[in-house]
Length: 99
Length: 135
Image 1: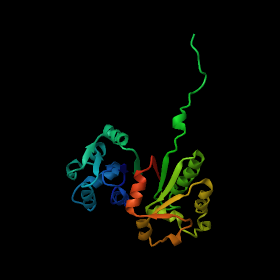
Image 2: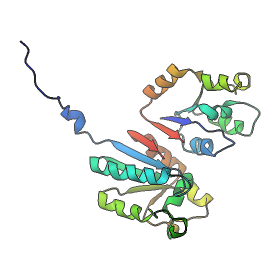
Image 3: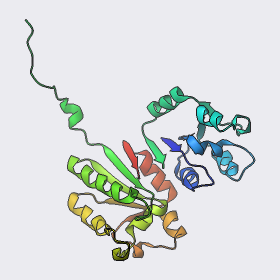
C-alpha cells in the first residue's frame, strides 16, 4: 500500500496518523508541504526515522527543491520525480491520501 | 464494405466484479464540507452494489457523536444519516480506537453501532481494499 502525505508535520497530525496505520512493507510518499517531514534535526524526524526501518519513505524532488531543503534530507529518504510518483502509484495495489 | 456493430462492447467480466471500497473519514462534521460530501459519496456508492466500508479516524470520529444539534449554526444536522446507511446495505463501520480515546470518547457516545479497531486491525483492513477514498 502507498500512503501519501501532503501537509507539514507542524500544521496537522496527518503524518502521525499515517505512521501509526502504515503496515510494515508499505511506502510513504511525502509531497507538497509534507516534504518538510523528510528533513533532519526537527521534531518530526524521530517518527520518520523510526519508520524507515519498516517502510520505504519517498519525497517528491520538485517539492523538495522548491522549498530549498535538498541539503537537509534525512538519510534513507529516497527522492522521486513526477515519473517516479506515477511508478509508485502503479506499483502499489492501493493508495491512501492523508488529506 | 465494413460491418458495424453499432454499439459499445460491454466487458461483462469486469462489470460483474465486486470491489472493496473503503471511505476514510478524518474530518470533524461542520468545520469543513469534507464530512458531508464524504457521506454523499458513500450514499452514491450504495447504488453500485460494491463491498463498501467506512473508516472513522482522527477528527472523523466526531462525525458519529450522538446528540448533534445544529439549529444554532443554521446548517443541516446530517448525523442521523449514518443510522440510515443500514437501509442501503452499508453496514461496515469501523472506528479507530486510538482516535476515540484521544478525544475522551467511547462507543457509548456514538450514534450508530460500530466496530472499534486497533491500529493493527485498521492497517490490515485498509491495506486489503481495492480502492481507498479519503475525506
